[in-house]
Image (cartoon, rainbow, N blue to C red):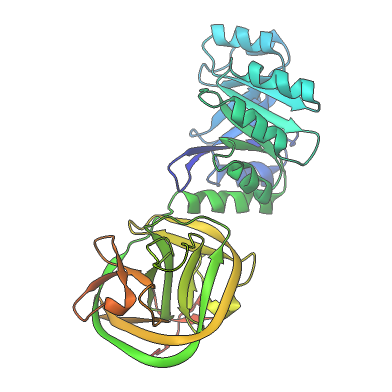
Length: 373
């Protein structure tokens, strides 16, 4: 599987089927019906298995004779560089597999992998430091580097190392739920963009004191990013990150001064959460002015009493509103992609908003009549 992350980088996920019985129909069926399309097999499996035409085969070989009769488009993998050199002469894409268990092996690895199209690495310890060192050494190389992992969580960590992450993972598991989870994750990753619409402001009003929450993330947000916040499940308004001019204090590029504590915040799994339900480790959806989205981890939610400001208007005849801290330094995103100081917003102005399907129970969409005012 080649997916694309939120920064536009290609990411590869291969499923390791070498140790899976041919009779394990659950495994092979899960692969065939998943978002994965690349599978690592033995030569014997390659000759016998009947998988979808879209399948990209990676064939693990141990002897030169196993190269005979392979499809030229099959990727050949081996631990032996000399066998891969032979495969190259036959026109195959090649992949070196390296098990790294020492500093000497690590130093040799980055020099070896440069000679091949792909490299799969595994380490004897759970630390990602060896992966970081290889990534640093491979900067500028065309080799596609994959790390062997067995879980979705491990995959996500590997793909995020040093921001760039490995180019992909070799997923070694025969657990069907894990394969399904990875498939679902890849499908979501391939569609990480939402449609933002103009909200025409109808009213801006000071409404008195109340509790508001700042969402401090473990990421650095850009100037065109923020979080969707709204008082109803019908949708939210894009509230900007604190990456814009503040006259008396330093910027807080990890923060969104999100709004009153009753507010919904939009998450990644088609859910919303109340600001008061967020805590360290929660994962919220950061959204750019272009509708590009990514998942960011909450490091802290800071709740304090502040004066509050109501901004409400219409998106395609649907009323939406957000209640924010009543202060000039709070920004909401205009339809032109430029931040607007909340206290300077006026009726007739147009802000970026997200229109959702109304009706939720504990943050999950439900099919029932719900009126929110």
